[in-house]
Amino acid sequence: MSAQNLIFLVFALVLLLIPRSWLRLGARVTPKPPRKYNQAKVERDPYDHTVKPEAEAMKPRNWLDLFRGMVGAGVLFYVAEDKAGSAGLVATPYFGWAIALLVIAVVSQMIRLQGRLGLFAPIFFLQGVNLGINGAVVGLIVMLGSWALSPVLPSAGALLFVQGATALILCFLLNDATPAYGLVVAGLCWVPVLVSILMRKRLSASFDKKLKIIPRDARAD
Image (cartoon, rainbow, N blue to C red):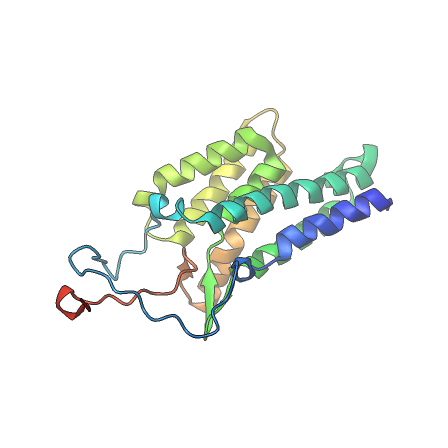
């Protein structure tokens, strides 16, 4: 491997493998007191697990996830394709190595340790990976389509499943797309769903801690 490709590979792995929880710009020395909210303004259905696109779009770390997933996956496949040469990436062992690294990256993003083990649905990260692997056409259609359907999907896991299935179908239908790449993206999107089912833990769409809701009468003046 050339020095240039080695640098690119390290750069891609850094972007892909940094856990989302490390992306905080700072940490508090003392625990932050619970924020107080007006009960009349904050009403939540405990059985509503749908992903709110307008709320998720307001979180800068989600867009950072999208960017590093796109750049990391794109650079990783560029290095693998360069090593494969004229033989074609899919027909070489480099394709398998690239898939293995991406699976490790997805697992590192979905593990959430905040007192106890939780599972996070890396929706934006996987949308970025899809953009990096399959390009703008498939990536944007999948991204916009999945978010358009999110209000009627019951959970983050369902959103990931639809996201993967859409990428897979598009890669088989579009002439300029690579079906094998669609299979990769679909499999990566379904990994968190499968782990969630096996561990019997619900995928969380947010890394935010649960907010303590305090009624209006309990608020401090």
